[in-house]
Image (cartoon, rainbow, N blue to C red; front, side):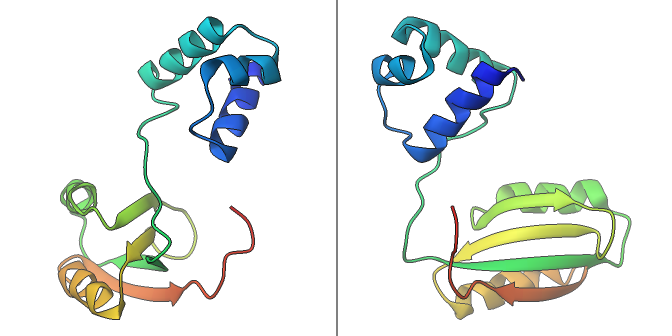
Length: 132
């Protein structure tokens, strides 16, 4: 991704409701050129989805230690769960790192009960967000 693409993404991350014209003024492009660049980023997968972040949800960080090699099945399980905000296959501690957004500990318990089909896990919770 070039410098212009990174600048557009940075502005969208700060204010996703900005108009193409205003964003264009900030990055020195026309509004139409910005719209084309954003569409290209959507087409190539750089921008995959738009989300609404609810302030009443708690974030949990889960490290998954797989007891099985059914990675495709596990990844399908993650894709189907709306409370999974992010999931990454990792090298290092664990096999996957997840960011889960739940209303409360009861919702976390339901998710982790289902997670046991695939392996063990370690959960940390967000105390307070310092950036982003």
